[in-house]
Amino acid sequence: MALLDILEFPDPRLRTKAETVEAVDDNLRQIIDDMFETMYDAPGIGLAATQVNVHKRLVVIDVSEDKSEPLVLINPEYEVLDQELESCQEGCLSVPGFYEEVVRPRHIRLKALDRDGKPYELEAEDLLAVCIQHEIDHLNGKLFVDYLSPLKRNRIRKKLEKQHRASA
Image (cartoon, rainbow, N blue to C red; front, side, top):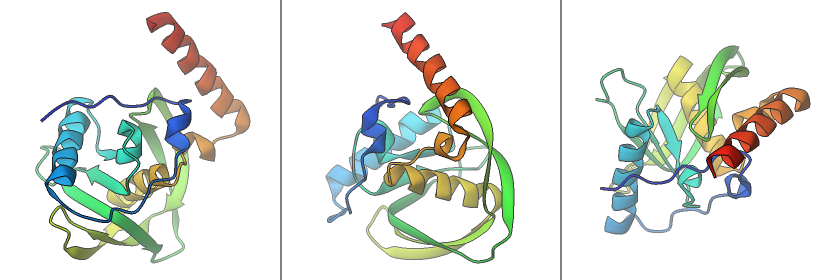
């Protein structure tokens, strides 16, 4: 396994729309394993392939405290099951050090393929539902900062650009 580099906002590659996964094979499973290692090391609870510059519809998630509930989402889709919205403080491995309130539906149904290419569905609420929506946004070239006011988004972008210049 290998740690992958996580792209950071405002990197334009984060805006790339991910392509459908056509084949679930050993190469894809290796990417999945590397993504889990990268996510756990970061540490985070979700990672979309787009964030590691792999533009395939692939997400890994584990919202458990002890890293015991890994979820693989290949070609994920979701539907909102009720219109109740929830405000949750979100952070992102691609926007390190920033946490902001984002409002999203709190109850969804996910449809995806697992690491073996088998289809599955699950209902998700609260943190898992937020995480799924956040990661699928990445696959569509959207970041949680897009839900913020332009003023907040620009402030975060400028701070991260300054950090990138200082570390270069």
